[in-house]
Image (cartoon, rainbow, N blue to C red; front, side):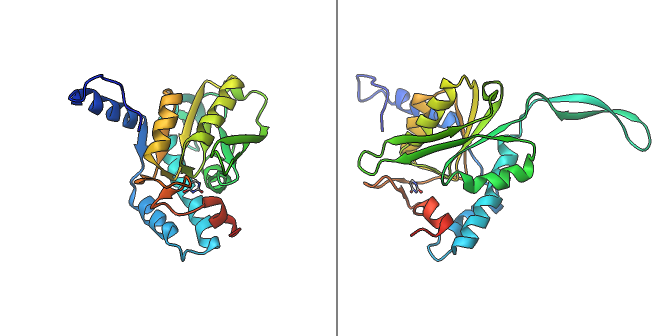
Amino acid sequence: MVRFDTGCACCRDDFYDYEEWLMDAVTIVGHPLVRHKLSLMRDKTCSTKSFRQMLNEIGTLLCYEITRDLPMEEITIETPLMQMQAPVLAGKKLVFAPILRAGTGFLDGMLAMVPSARVAHIGLYRDPETLEAVEYYFKAPQDVSERLVILMDPMLATGNSAVAAVNLLKDKGVKEIRFVCLLAAPEGVEKLRVAHPDIRIWTAAIDSHLNDHGYIVPGLGDAGDRMYGTK
Ligand code: URA
């Protein structure tokens, strides 16, 4: 892990400050339903169908948490009994931005919660040699720069895809981005946090580490393959 260079091995305070700073941006959604479903998904005997279904369901549950502090405004409505001021979401519709292909696993679950959200697709693949993210597709609403974007990928592993996706969105002028994943590696959290300190991260769990192939350990394997049965 990268650390602040304190120039002194005994400067433990800076070490702890750095860890705290990293985790400051992270919300671990430890709801029992999320933890239960994640454990079932990790199991290698979990079927493709169940894996995909639970990823969707967790998408719904995570969406509930990510949107917890959205701004509201009051409008005037008429109930069958009387007029009242009622709270509704303020501002432009959200944009859900799955990183292809595994990010789409969250999409329907999130759209179930916020059906009017717009969708941006971000196509990135991981070069197997360098593990760097390579862009192959980007399609977003024209006014994406004026909207809050929820960027999603089940696995925050090396962090390369997440950083590349945020770079792309920021290049389009997007000012407010939140990142959501199912599982994160400490390395990925650090990479994203250092590259984009303004981005908050929501995850169901942070695992131990990455292996030499860039897989999260203990993890759940390749999320895309497990969703679509391609391996
Ligand atoms: N992508 C995956 O699907 N799984 C990992 O463990 C890491 C990256």
